[in-house]
Length: 267
Image 1 (cartoon, rainbow, N blue to C red):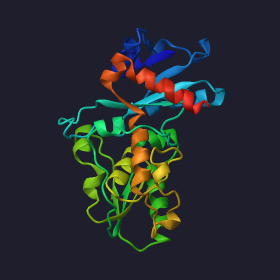
Image 2: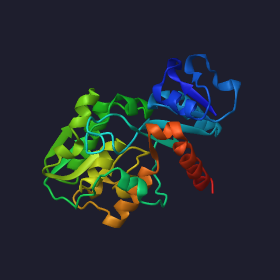
Image 3: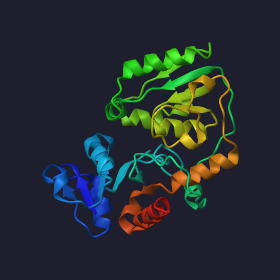
Image 4: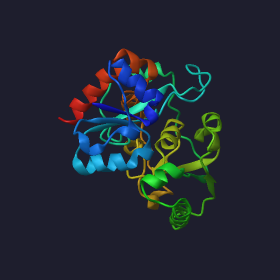
């Protein structure tokens, strides 16, 4: 496997490669056509490489922020970026694989009961997914609001993503849901937080980790489906097996679990 490291200095890619006794490859000196080995890369802005891999059916692993555990909490009081998802051949873990509950319980998080509210909260995507999916944010917002208004007269609140990670890690989506009927979003982490907080979510990205527990059709905005506790628990356990603590990059646990996941996905 080739571990693509931006400027030869990607902290997490380098950490993973070194944990396996491998050396990362500087992205700037690497050429796609010089090999057919599987790739590991981090960040959605590697979109040209990802799309070329899809076109060529070249295996890759995609690394990005974890879904759970990176917010300030009992097990991570400073909200450090300790957890990272790794996805075989895709951007998100959007199909539930049956998993044990040990890794979910290790996170010390809770699944809230179904909430009720009156408004629609739109959590807008930032520029990175917009660029990947070739959408324009203002157009997306206008079209999404217009579609919602066709099916409900509830008040609509728009929450745009802060550029500051420090603000994002303390200002969680669930803190905006004091009177929310449903959340409409593009991003997986916002959708994940919404479901765990007990609020129905509508996901509009083609690939979203919350799709198995989310609504997809805004025509149902007045009567959204919400999964039962068993469905949410199975999904949460699945996500916990798709993300890894940085210590697991170093000790081989992440590699062991990812290989298991790849075997399951490949039948």
